[in-house]
Figure 1 (cartoon, helix red, strand yellow):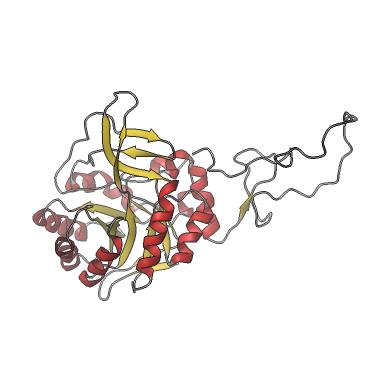
Figure 2 (spheres, rainbow, N blue to C red; figure 1 turned 180 degrees about the vertical axis):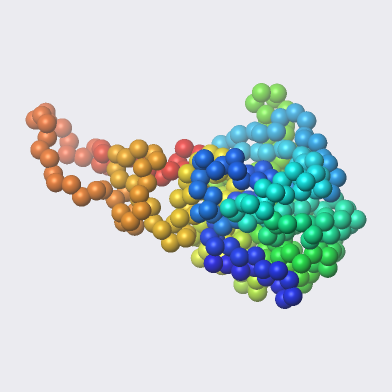
Length: 331
C-alpha cells in the first residue's frame, strides 16, 4: 500500500503499485472491464483535461515505428466542467481511484480547474503535466496554484529531458509525488501520407532512459516517485522499484496486451502467476512457482514412434521444445 499525502490535505491510498498512465483508458476505465480485472490495479490517470474544450489533431495521429509508436492526438477533450458532468457519477462508483490529469494552458484556467475539482466527488488526486520546455519558474507557479487551491493530493509529471532539475522545483513548490517521466517528443514519417509527424514517443526502448532519471531523483527526493515509460514486463517494473520508485505507470502495453498489465499488477502485488509449457495464452495460474517457464510435474511418457537414426541430440540453437512464454514479446 502506498500513501500519497500532504500535511493538512487529503490522502491518496494506492493498494497496488501499478497505475494506468494518462490517456490510456480515456476518461474512465469501464471499457476495459471485460479485458482486465480493474480491482487488481492501483489507480488510473485520466486523459489530459483542460479548462476549455480542445479538438483533436488533424491528420495522422498514430505512427508505428520499430520498437514503439508515435502519438499525435492534440489532447482532445470537451473541457473540465462537461467532463465532470458526464463522468462524475462513474468516477464516484469506480473500482479504481481516479486521478485527473491536468494541462496548464494558463494561470487563470488552472485556478478554475483547481477550484472546480476540489468540490467534485469521486476524484482521488490530481496529476499536473508539465510542458517539455517549461521553465522552473513557470513550473513553480503552476504547482503553487494547484497547491493553494486544492486539498487533493498532487502528482507532478516531469518531462524526461530535464526531470532531475524540475523534480527539485516540484518538491520546493509542494508536490506530493513525482511522476518520471512524460513521453518525450519526436518525429516519424507516416508511411501512408509520406509526411513527417511530430508527437509523443512510446516503447520499450524508453526504459533505460527513464530508469536513469528515476535513480537520479531518488537520491534526493523525500516523496514518492512513480516511474512511467517502457514497462512491458514485471521485471521492467521491478527494476524501477529497485531504482527508488514506489509505484509505476503503464502506458501503451495496455493497448497491445491488456492481460500482461494484470500479470504485472499481480506480480508486484505479491501473487506470482505462471504458465505451463504448451498452455494457451490465457492459461495463467497462481501458485505454480516462481517462473513462467515452469513445467507441470507429470510422469515421463515413451515416444509414440521410434525416432529416426542419425539426428543430432540437440539443435544448434537450443532445445527444440523451448518456446517463448513472455506475454509481451509480440509488442
